[in-house]
Amino acid sequence: MAPVCVLVGAPGSGKTTVGRALAELLGVEFRDTDLDIEATVGKPISEIFIDEGEAHFRTLERAAVATALATTAGVLALGGGAVLAEETRSALVGHTVVHLSVELPDAVRRVGLGAGRPLLAVNPRATLKYLLEQRRPHYAAVATATVVTDGRTPEQLAVEVAALLPS
Image 1 (tube, rainbow, N blue to C red):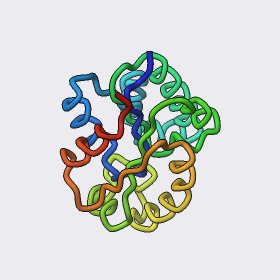
Image 2: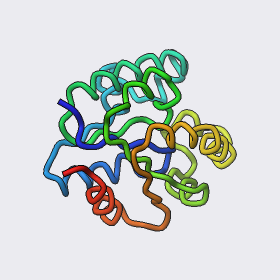
Image 3: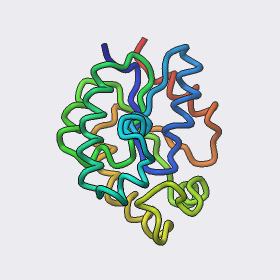
Image 4: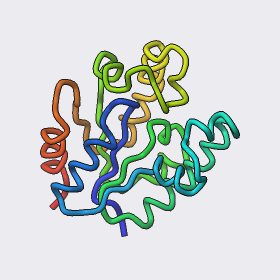
């Protein structure tokens, strides 16, 4: 079993929103590894960061991604930082991975002041700028396709991503 599509991208790129729209369009399940982690641990990611730290969260994330890649037949959205782990990048080889690319102005507009996003708690705009610069090469390295999300609706993006998927 393998996902029909794995979505990667920065915070605010639309992974969850577009992922849900894409899954609905394709008639398949939608899965988000961030939601998997929250369900497993029983608390929001922001609390995991506060209580156990980012390193612990990243360990949980690597395990969640590995499980989801092996057990998901639908659309899978990964957390924005999942691609930082070499283990995850290696696990994505052979999968259809779509990078939802977003530029800073749209990302800032979409995430607002970073409520519920622990890495964006302090100075969200500067942090987003840094995250975009740091992670963009990793997204590009794992992606089989890139879709620019700026100024577009989730439904438009779902249609474009669906057209990129192997038949």
